[in-house]
Each structure stands twice: as structure tokens, then as C-alpha cells.
Image (tube, rainbow, N blue to C red; front, top):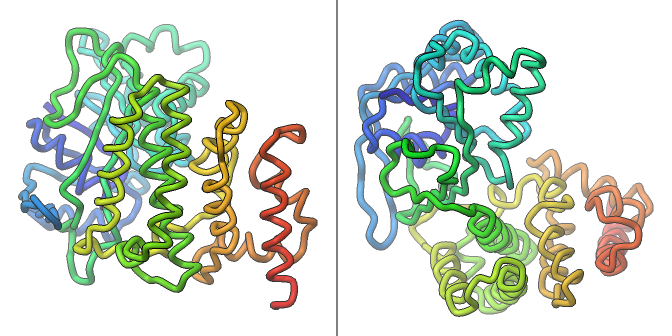
Length: 386
């Protein structure tokens, strides 16, 4: 069995690739970073180090890497006879991944089992997005190719922090992970992925993860940066920050309970587990890494505006989420392009209109006035600093 994974970075090696290796797949990483590809091909093995309670080291073997920029034909050939394709590249990159997958499907033996495609991204319906890109590229040819692949959405969760200096291709991760996969598309032949669980309805798993893990992680980063902390664990050790993050997650849990019928007691236990994970002192994670790209994280269907908008629509509170949104607006990192752009625009543009554009909220949405107030407050705070 063979799996091709797009994205040879820390998540690719330390989470998705690791589980595929444990499932017995020959592992082919695809990436455009020449130095990383060369380092992977120069190694016979790498180690995934789990740090924290219950952590263990796992050695990964049976892999190679291909530079998709330098050898696109080689990549297409690898995909054409693979069993599984996965991605961890970011949702905006999926349109570039679509082209080699389509070319590989054209070459794939029509009698072979369908290629099993899963996009493992922090986004709702990421595999659907990838499939749509492939179909759009195929045009009228898709009818003849459709049977050569199946597509399943997934929800993935594992904290993979910035790596220590000199780690090579080894990866440090937390012990906890979750990989939920749609069962239906695979019929009686699901991929062999130890530790993954197959579910009939993925939506509750995706939103529970995005609105708890992603919301809580980013809230900790923004509130921590505002308070002058460097590490995520140190920020969450501050009782005031922990209280505000917990309050935001109580609001997202209330939404999840109403929207998906999830059990409030189970959600409370899930929140508790998430906060323990963030507080893991062995993870060398920083508020700057977790907080990067605030413009994206403040967009309409992301981790703050998404649940806050749905909460107020359902008559639920979003007060704590608005506190986190205000902290996100104050995230000022000269090394992060989106942070620099956000602070510049807060100085230069009318805050109410900027709030509309950044968040994507509708003009009549009940959340908008409070969000515009947060933008106006931040704009006033930075008005005297140049």
C-alpha cells in the first residue's frame, strides 16, 4: 500500500504521516521546500517525540519525498498508483494540489480501486473544496474520471508546536490526537489508519474541534500576547487569562449543544481536556506562532466570528468571544504580515467599514454593532502611535 501526502512539514511528518506509517503505508511526502525534501531523502528514519504525560517516542521508516516544483511528472506518477492521498498544506493551497491529482487520475488504471483522498486541514469541508477544484479543472472529462477517486472530509486535531533548534526532521508533538473521517464515501473499504475513527456525520466533530481547540488556542495566544506572555502554557497559567478563555469556550459549547445536540456534560469534559493540553509546559509553543494571521482568524467562518455570529443568532451570549476578538485586534507582531497589515489598516481606515470587510458580517447582522465597537476601540488606541 502507498500513501502520498502533500505537505512534508511538522504536521505532515508528526501527525498524518505518522499514522499512515503505522497503518502500513509506504509514505511519499510531496513538498516544494527543496531543503526539507533533501533532508527527508537523506534520512532512513525520523522520530516523533511526544512530550507531556503519557508521551512516547515513535520511529518512522519507509518514506521518501518528492519536490513537486522540480519533478511534477514524478509526483503525478506516484499518485497514479497510490492507494491514499492526504494533505496538510492549508486550505488556500488546495487549488494547487488539485492539478497533479487530476493528472494522476487521468493516468490511473480504470480497473484499480478508487484513490482515497482526504484533505486534513483546519477548515470545514476541506476535502469538498479540493474535489470541487479537481472537478472544475476536469470540465467535461470528469464524468469518465469520477469513479477513479473517492473523497472524504476529515477533522484533525494535534498540537504540533514550533520545533526546537537542530531537530532535523524529527518532530515534537503533544501525546493527544484525534482524526475523525467520514465513513460513507469508502463503503466497505476504508483506509487503514490506526487511531482514526470513522463517523457517519462529521459536522459535529469538525465544529467541536474548530470552535473549541482553534477558538481556545487563538484566544489564549491573543490574550497572552496582550498581557506580555511569550509561551502559550505560561499565558494559560495566568488565572485571569484562563478564566477568559474558559468563558469563551463555554459560549462555543452552548452553541454546539444547541446546534448539534451534543451533551453539555461531555462538552464540559472536552473543554477541560483542551485546556489541559494548552497548559502542557513541555510544549515549546508561543503566542506568536499560534496568533499569526489574525486577518484570516477574524474572517466570517473562522474560529471567532463564526461561532459568535451563530450564538447571537440563536439568542445565546457571545460576550467572552467579543473579548477574544478585541484581543485579536490588538495582536501586534512585526514578524507577521497579516498582523502588520491589520494594525496599519486600523490606523488608516474607518473602523466600522473595516469591521465589515475583515469579518464578512452582513450589515444587518446582530453581532456587527458589537464587533464594530471593538474595531473602533482598537483604532482609537492606536491612533496616537505611528
